[in-house]
Each structure stands twice: as structure tokens, then as C-alpha cells.
Length: 291
Image (cartoon, rainbow, N blue to C red):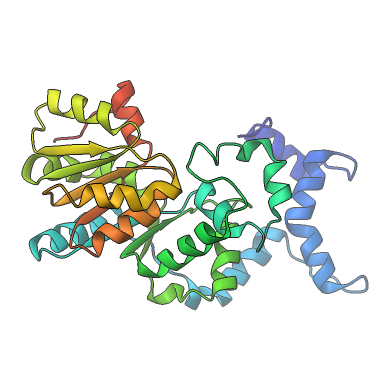
């Protein structure tokens, strides 16, 4: 994530000069903002941490709690018992970038950023304003939305910009961490319960492999699997899903999972964005937790 260890950053906070990139980053991320607000003829005799702490106190009435893994598990179990649909979708940099293109970030900047060249693999080729607008609409239709907690430009800060642009009523939305799929795996037995006690449909390009693996581990309630080519193939995927008798869908389909989960929940299915957890199960770096 960074070429500098914590000690290096601490030294630069104590002894730093403008021409050094580390010091420049620290300055632009905090002190320069304070300077610009105060102007050149005023000072505020506090360190940046103290200023931020006081600022957070003054905005504390806007703080929103994110649902924990145990709380998410409880919501899903409640929906199962009531035989109601429930959609859990997640916002990562792929979904956020797609929703932001040509609204907050020009497409040309996205296409020229090597770190974002995974978008076609995730199911979207930009520009694609219909998919962008559908993803933004789905945010308000999902039962629960996982959002990034880390305040980096392409994660939480981009979500905040999108929320302001679309005027999403965050106080009325049920939010959790964008890594909730991993937290559910690590902190609960939810996936073991779903796979053991309910009919499960797997959706995604690696789900055929996942189906074989999970059945070999004794999860025989899996009714089938459906591949997802890209976001344009979602209507066909939904048609194919109609042919199965199932209670729960685990969806590992990149950006398309957002739309699939919301639509399946409308048909009284539990639909969970399973994400790259299926890759780790297939690769053997994780196993379904049951203890």
C-alpha cells in the first residue's frame, strides 16, 4: 500500500520540508486545507489532529453506525424466516468508478489509469451511462449496502461524493462494510447455515467450479450455477435463474452482482454479493466456517 513505514511518516511529521514528496502529501492532506480556510493573516495554534478531533465532535450528530457481521446475519435470518426477499450488495472501487464516470470523474481519466483496467473483467466497459444510472438507482432499492470504510479517494471519499450528487438519504439507508462478505465468513457461521439448510443457487463465472467444490464438501443443497458474461447479460441471467427452485443466491459476478441481487430480492429470494470469497474457496485459501 505504501513505500514508507510508520516510523518514516512520523519522522516526516516532525522534520519535513516542502520539496519532499512525503511532507508534501502530509501537508496537502491537512495543514494546507487549514491554511486555505484561515487565510494568510490568521493562525490557529493547534496541531492538525486536534483540529480534526474538534471538527468530528461538532459533526458527531451526523455519524452513522455501520451494521456489524452479526447484525447482518440476524437481518438475513429474519428475512429467511419471514420468507421475504433480501438483497445485500457491496460498493467497491469498480462499482463506485462506474457510477462516477462522466459525472464526477471523466471517462478519459479512468481509462488512462492503469489501476482501473480491471473494469472490463468486472463486467463493465466505459463509457456506459445506462449501467451507471441503473447502479445508482439500485443503491436505493437494496435492503443493505456495503460501503468502503477506508477514506481513500477511490473508496469512501468517492462514495461520499456520489451520495451528495444523488442526494442519497444516508440516515435512512442500512449500511455495512464493503468487505461484509469476508466479515460474515470470518465472524459468523451464516454461509455454512445457508448452504446446509436451504436451497442455494450460485451465480458467477467461477460458480461452476464453486458448485463442484462445495458439493464435494457435503453441501448438497446447491441447485445449480449460472455464469455471468458481463453487465449486459444480466437479463439473461435473471431469466435462467427463474428456472431454478431456490431460497438463497450467492452472487460472485463483479459489478453485475449489484443488479442481480436487487432483482432477485424482488422475487422473495435472499441474494448476497459473495464477491471474491468464491475465488478464495476455490484456491483453498479459505474454507466455509463451521464452529
